[in-house]
Length: 185
Ligand SMILES: Cc1cc2nc3c(=O)[nH]c(=O)nc-3n(C[C@H](O)[C@H](O)[C@H](O)COP(=O)(O)O)c2cc1C
Image 1: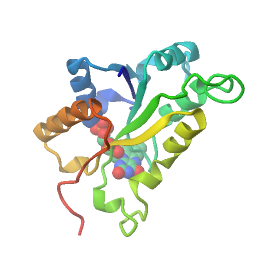
Image 2 (image 1 turned 60 degrees about the vertical axis):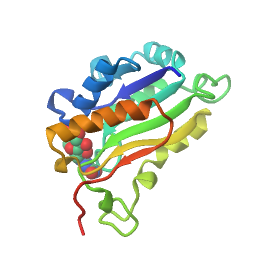
Image 3 (image 1 turned 45 degrees about the vertical axis):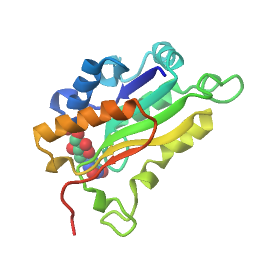
Image 4 (image 1 turned 90 degrees about the vertical axis):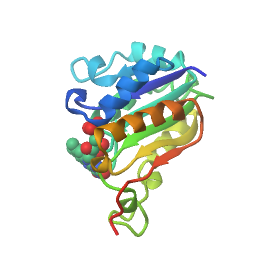
């Protein structure tokens, strides 16, 4: 299955985790990697170019660091620009129907924080549910994805292992949670 990984980091030059993930995916060479910060022109995207990328792949993975319990604004801009009425939804908007959608997310806070009884009182599944709603709206099949919580607990070499885990996960279709190494309890 052809896979497109959309990388939505505002500044990969300052990234520790998502940069490693991109490097591993590019080295692995099995997926197409699209770095949104390199495609932005005057705060918007070339809609036809982005749509052509989406049309050319069967599985789409949105990769991003969690920012304020959501995706960074660059991904919201991309969604607003690219998933056009008449293309992604509405009359004649069938371009994405039947494709797969997943997310790959890194968070500073730990897995325990993202539980009903945890610090934020919300699970990652709840907080990322808009992506499932988007998939449903445009006729895509949503499977939750790849989650790395508690990134501050990881050494560089352990982060390299998570990058390997991401490339392995991309060859499967199941969801994957890399648990925080240290509990908040
Ligand atoms: C503006 C901003 C908002 C953030 N909000 C959250 C958040 O809501 N929850 C969380 O767990 N981490 C949050 N973080 C931490 C990032 O998720 C974390 O640093 C990132 O996943 C690390 O990936 P990177 O090294 O590729 O930047 C935030 C970071 C920034 C800069």
